[in-house]
Figure 1 (cartoon, rainbow, N blue to C red):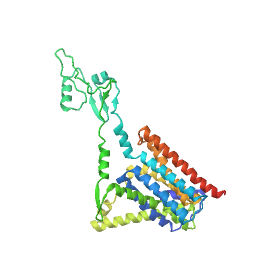
Figure 2: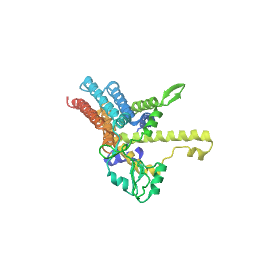
Figure 3: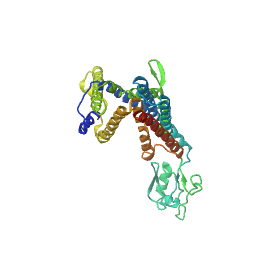
Figure 4: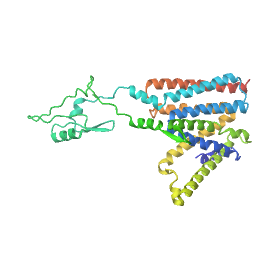
Amino acid sequence: MSFLTCWFVLFFGVPFKYDPIGIISGLLWVPAGTFGIYGVRNAGIAICVGTWSGVTVLVSFIWGLFIFGEQVRSRIQTLLAVLLLLLGLGGMAYFSSSHRQKKHQQGTTPPLVHNDLTERLLSDDKIEHDGIKEQGLDNSNDDDDDDDMERGDSLLTASSSSSNGEDELTSFDSLIGSSGAIEMEAKPDTEQDEEERRRKEVISVCGLKVSRFSLGLAGAVYNGALGGSAIVPMHYSEIHGLPFVISFAIGASIVTATIWLLRFLYHLQRLGNFQSAWNALPSFHLRVMCIPGAIAGTLWSIGNVASILAVTYLGEGIGMSVVQSAMMVSGLWGILYFKEIRGMYNIFWWFVAACITLVSIIFLSHEHEAIKNP
């Protein structure tokens, strides 16, 4: 998608220029994304995003201030602002982590179903709670009640009909709370338990036994180190700013196509058949990913253009550091839309960390503005 969208900069009056050094940017950026995906799959998205954002800040800070010699008003103040930024990023990652969300779920009381008890017991309609369908009791159908008791599908039970034809309900003292609501035990989060078990799994790498979590964390570190250096080649090019977007996109496309070709040749050598080698490649899932993939790719391309402009006008050290504030946007999506961050405690401290991040960004911007207007 980067290759398809990079040409839109030409509509802004940007002349077409290409520098092969963009291939080096691609060699840094494409593996960085691969390591990032590997990290998320093995260590979790929150800890990985926080890790590679922090590493990116440190790497870009080193490139900008110590290698390129970018001038700031005070290196000590800039360093303090960077440390403050790392604190904010780390706080947002911690309070959005799956560990914090799981701890919040364990600390909450079992959910209560506040419905009319009589209606729940005597209704003929099926009701659903947490994906489990329950059949209401029917006074006119004793056979259905017996079947329900034999199967054990319903959380409510009924006794057999009495001689006068009236149903007698069994005691529900163990299910009914003081508020008259039915207490349902929270189902164990088996998916999170399985994910946690998988992260602790130990595998052998070059004779060394390493947990999947550690490997995932290492992938996040590599992603931050390589991603934080992806725009560095622009400093050695005669092309800067928007014109470099095209070189970057072409370089990334060449590297991606080369990796796919090498993978295809590997399967071809192993399987000895073109069709089998092609089928062994990962599916593109075009039917599923066509629209959402295009939207995500377009949004990323816009962000990539903005990051190149940030580095061009703010410098590598400050520009790439400020770009990592994108973590605030993803966190807001998680709170307001996806409801991934739960509990007022976690949400409150996440916003505190976000405020720290904003303050650090203001400090960093001030350092740059001081150079422009000494």
